Image (cartoon, rainbow, N blue to C red; front, side, top):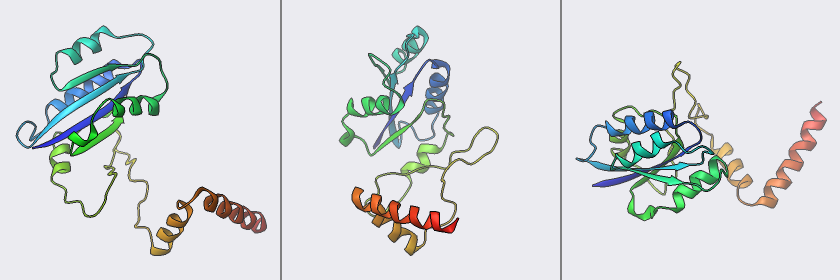
Length: 173
């Protein structure tokens, strides 16, 4: 059975975090096809007893109190470093204000991913219907892929390419 970890960061917004966790409890296939384990990193200045009690009463949720607010990404890293990622088929990270459709993880575990894939990003839709992901609406061309591969191959290569680009940008004006 697939095990899936979800890591989120709470900062002064326990109501969003609880809503997100509730959306995870009702996933189709949970306990039959996969298990979920949620890690809530609390970066809040003001500790919420409501959040602590909620997490304590939900067996799939782990409450992790951060000693200080180091920010969103540091909070995610704190959550990731507290788990053994090799125990999980998938590790999901995201905002605490996400609400998952009840078949999200059913679709995730049903994917057939080819090759070495390190990251997947779902289509995120706001409550008013705006699609926020993926940011790339059309497939990247072979030339575009080459350019990205070259740019990300080395820091010095990236700096060199940016300098060349700035020369062309100035001459175009």
